[in-house]
Length: 112
Length: 113
Image 1 (spheres, rainbow over the protein chains, first blue to last red):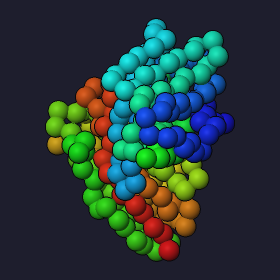
Image 2 (tube, chains in turn red, blue):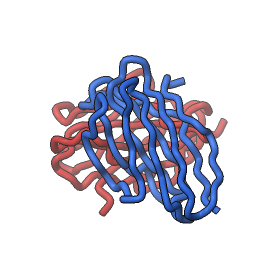
Image 3 (cartoon, helix red, strand yellow):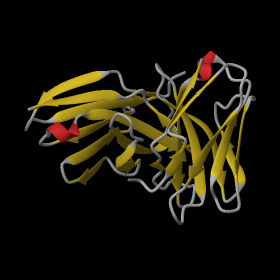
């Protein structure tokens, strides 16, 4: 039972354009969501997070949107840069648990 | 560099064997988490320790065990290894073990032949 789903295994975007990565969750008890970026041969790196009391959080080029009614969140990267090419993982936690439940990741390729 | 260190970086062993993976958390972090990433799976939570005590258990097999020592480093012990245990094993740490950011180490790649 996959509680966090990233339905797009890969995404290609031109440099300078917007990248939109999507994530859906099924557990209504999740109340804190995170995005991690992972380069090959490295561990995941924290990118941005959002609490369920908000619907948007912004940090520089990165913005996360949360739609609680749809159980959907998205990560927007504007403008996309070649260095953003990596695998992006969506993660969620809540319901009195602090373990992270991860999606399977989306591989983003930003083409110069 | 996240500040979390893991050793060894790579480990190749045979079925039936036992291995120990080691993790040192970031300075000041009290909580340690272990995750497994198999080829076709996302990161799967295994177990969490906070200040030496087990706090949460996920999809950890009975053949696997972990502990966190007084100096806060942690070890993950994998025994009676099977081919399917081949994976990347990540350690993460956080300050309080609550809803604070988890910082990941570079991982240990385990290959069971």
